[in-house]
Amino acid sequence: MEEAPKSKLYVFEPLVRKLPEVSVPKRHVPFKEKFIWSALTLVVYLIMAQIPLYGMAAEAQNWWGSFQYILASRSGTLMQLGIGPIVTAGIIMQLLVGARIINLDLTQSRDRALFTGVQKMLAIFIGVIQAAAYTLGGAFGSPISLQAILLLIAQLTLGVIIVIYLDELVSKYGFGSGISLFIAGGVASAVFWQAFNPLESGAFPGELGGAIPKFFVDGVFYRPWPEPSMVGVLATLAIFFIVIYAENVRVEVPLAYSRFGGIRGRYPIRFFYASVIPVILASVLFANFRLIGRIFGGSFQEFINTYLNSPNGLTQVAADPIRAVVYLVILVGASMGFAWMWINMTNMGPRDVAQQLHRSGMSIPGFRRDIRIMERVLSRYITAVTLLGGAAVGALSAGADFLGALGSGTGILLTVSIVYRLYQEMAREQISEMFPMARRFLGE
Amino acid sequence: MLRRFLYECRRVLRVARKPESEEYWKIAKVTGIGIMVIGIVGFVIRLIVELIGA
Image 1 (cartoon, helix red, strand yellow):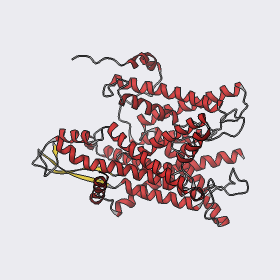
Image 2 (image 1 turned 90 degrees about the vertical axis):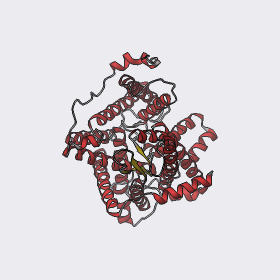
Image 3 (image 1 turned 30 degrees about the vertical axis):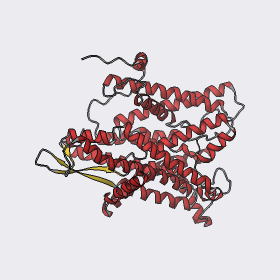
Image 4 (image 1 turned 180 degrees about the vertical axis):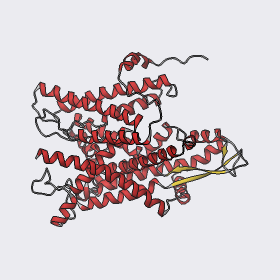
């Protein structure tokens, strides 16, 4: 067999080899151990999100706005950059491989190792760049001494490196991924803090911080953003129940095995086919526009901060309803686009699914056993579900923000679906441990 | 084409399987507890930090 040309990326291989790595577990990691690793990592993250940066000249500015939640970032702490660098590096690498600018075959273990290694280096590199941009851009106050600048960049970079390795640890020894665990941890803590905070609000001395204490002490049901109120608490609960519902809506395509005398089966297509990824991608895109806006300033920045940034709470929506509508339309449109892009990038499109089903000897009853016909039938379902699901996720996220939901609309959306999937994974793992034979069916 | 798409959407929503009430509440309960546990841990850590800092 002719050997495929090696990717130019291989110049990085000696460097990647030197990069420390969490070793792959050599045996099946038992349920209990996985649980302990995940819980431990989550606590480490939550503590790091409380450790203030040393050397700040003023209170840290939050450049991300409510995007901080999906980036698991917390201003003024070691987690200022959160998972931003990892996610950005991941998106860049995916795009480069997807567009075949980098020629790597991710089914090959050596190519895959190189891919993850380079992605890790890129994440650290982006981390340093963002750390420098924050510090030099005056997010921690200015003027600021050279010593403090270097110290701050070092701390932020250290934070990024720790997050990278914690993520790797969870991916290999825990449930789900570290990234999703950190997002859920950050959002869930923010929701609980904003709801129950018994202390004075930091921004408004003398005002109770939490929505529920405020309601019971002063009988206040609504107050304008950023102070959390009961309206936000109710909106948060509503989003929770809607997302749980929508996560469980699925379209089932009837199937038949051509062997085994035509046993009937069903192929489920979930309503959130591309899950919440479209909103994440749209938000990351908007967040990056926000940073670009900072650089250009002027009316460009104003435009981005107005229309690519959700109005928070009913007061802001009422003040500028057009802004709310424009934002809603842009977010829904972008989510649909990203949903479509995502399923095609991750082999979830009609053609890929048809190929998988065809290979396993299935066909759609009432139709000829032909892969093109199968693709066409599947395409009718998948196209509609993908776009509808993408639109729904975008609309839910925007709606939650309009109502001033705690922890941001996208944040809640993400957290509910992350924790739901975590539960599914844990349940599956437990079954496979109780019945080792079942592991085969579950594809482990 | 838009009309055709909207028609497909309506059809897909009609044939979609919605969760049954029992299944739904079970999932809501488990997921809710999961979020509560994570949220309470984060809340306690933050409360300790804020009280020490004050």
